[in-house]
Length: 144
Image 1 (cartoon, rainbow, N blue to C red):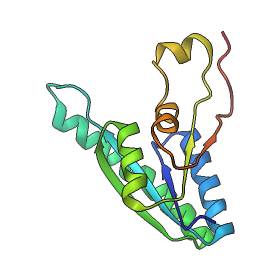
Image 2 (cartoon, helix red, strand yellow):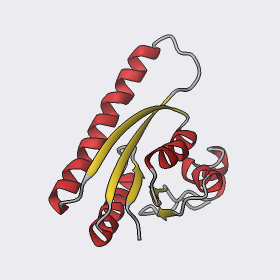
Image 3 (spheres, rainbow, N blue to C red):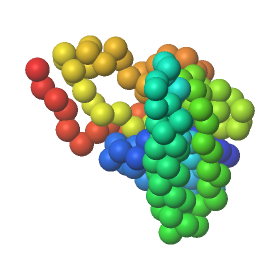
């Protein structure tokens, strides 16, 4: 059913849960996994190079974690580090890599905390892509 599955990760617990689900599905369907970390390029900063290096190092750690989980399951994984706006890069990556499914985590925020963050990357991806997207919820929900 799915030949390639994209799992965007950011090193958080909710993205790790999504990676576990993506790898379980890949194992079940004999699919390959594309693990993606997006280095967010926001506005100008006086310490921009340092921030990019920090994000890239965090991205390598997050991708290493997915690769280790994939090795344990015998699932093929390709690692990708891209720069840009996360939602746009995820949608573009899904098209570029020819994936049949995107598996993403969400923090499960509701109420004011969700409004204050102006929506989530996961929500934007779901709105921007025609590719089926499985959203893996967080462990808890902030109540308002």
